[in-house]
Image 1 (cartoon, rainbow, N blue to C red):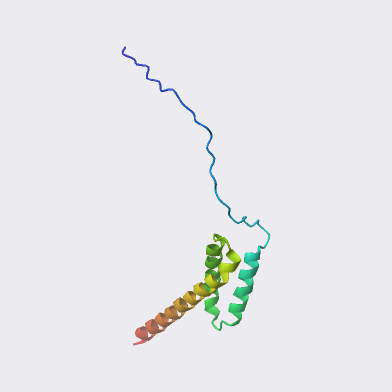
Image 2 (image 1 turned 90 degrees about the horizontal axis):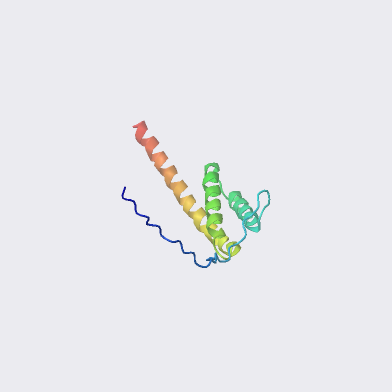
Length: 111
């Protein structure tokens, strides 16, 4: 039998460590962080001025998206209010556009 012993010697270098940078600490379950408190405060203010009950779902989603985006920045409490305003304005425009489409569809079905 033709058998070759082709072993490759293993070489190990020095242990490598990676710097993961400084990230904000993750919130623990059951506790409310300052970002969550700010989110709830701004959300309550915006909900108080919202006349449409169907818009609540869109607004809560916008607040969650803004909080998630703000969380990965170095200063989430500083960035969140602006992100929330932009996201909520976009959500309102989307809600109004969908209401307009629903109304147009109803009118077309009646004819």
